[in-house]
Amino acid sequence: MTCYTDPGYVPYKRIPNWTGGMMSTSDDDDENEGNRQQPVTTSNNYLRKCLLCNIEQPLRSHHCDFCNRCVLKYDHHCPYLETCIGEYNHCYFWCFLLTTDILIVWSIMLCSGSFVPFSDWSSWLHINKFRLFAMHVLIISLCATTILLCIHSVFALTNSTTWERVSRHRITYLNRLPNEDLNPFHQGYCHNFFYSFLCRRIKEQQWDIVYKKRVEEHVTLYIPTIVNQTEEKIVSNGVNHDAPIATKDFAVDSASSSFKLFDSERGVPKNLEQHCPDTISTNNSTELHKSYSNFITIKKHFACKISKNLPLDTVTPLLCASITTYSPLKQYHVGINTRMRVISLGHMAVKFGVAMGTHVTVIPTSESKYDDVIKFDAKAFLVSKDVEQLKGVENSFNFIIYTVVSMIKIGAPPKLVEIPALILLFKQLIITGSQIGRMKQKKKISIAYL
View 1: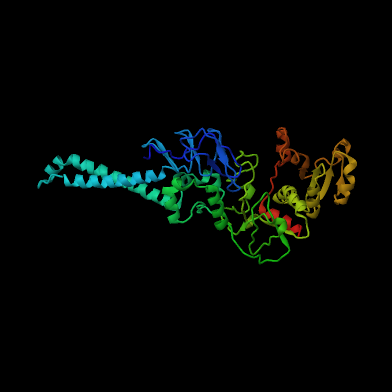
View 2: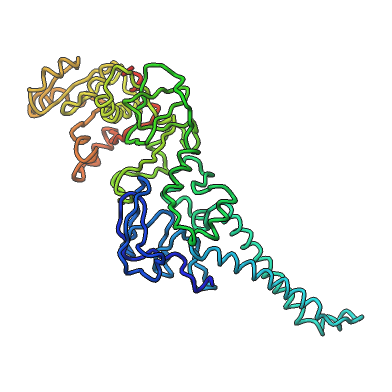
């Protein structure tokens, strides 16, 4: 039955409904794979696309390299049975392991009763050597199948799979959960075991709905009322969620009602964040769900406090622009004894430099920026096209911020910058770049806005 039952192959012709649900026009997907699939509304999760099958994958499905098909609730590919184990034949595979165990136990009983008794030990070994070998093989096989039976019994009780357990760090909908031990598909042991055997006969499981409900119940802290009435808002980059939630240190109002917050600090390297060696970048990454997730939940560590009197649409971009400048200034201890040169007019660089007591010289490309420079209390103003002015300040700076580069392609110059090696050797120069900075630095900036 395990070999001849469809493990849950995803039909090739599936139409995305962009809400996370798919339903066939027939009760049997395997017999009607060519039929058009009708979309059904389930939740706000987006389907993933398998480039090999050119289909939209439902949640928990995975492409099997051996079968070259996507399988619903993929568990593993069994090389002994030459088939995948998925949502539709997992119960038969469990029954196969159980009956195999029973058969092996029965074989051991028959084999043990077939031993020929001898008073002489050496004669007994000689006569029963094949029976003894068979007994060893049966015992080893019994151990292997029993272990597999126990493992898949646990999977049936907890509604998990081998693929999700072994490759959790590679699965997008699991590795982004803040709690590594959370099983987002667990619905109760009896319920899980029941559906492991009867799910196809009742209905196709809509795992996206189960996932959303489980995540909302167990990942975030549900607090019925906001106990902190301080006039502060929560700000975080690109966070979106269905309902607001707060901890004792934060309050959420209508302007920032798309956040969920929890207290766990696990997994946040101290003062590293953007510079962490294990960072998983999401900028310009492979398109997965067609949009930002509706499930993003932020840790308290990544939330900043902003004064209620300030508009979030103005302050939030400043947090990004200002931290990019503030981070290198703090990293290289820019202060009273520093002479800083700002190429072009970097408003945030000038403001931070002046506030830190630095001698700031602004060198834009034209004199049109003079009024702004004076307003920001910079010490000197030079025009980059005036060669004589630049010669007068040669070798007088020990910190330079080149804001023009930081405005091209998000901080990266369009072409490779050529710098003579002798300048680095004899002048002892340091050339560096700046990312958005650490959360500790960002929170210091946000305090300035309070």
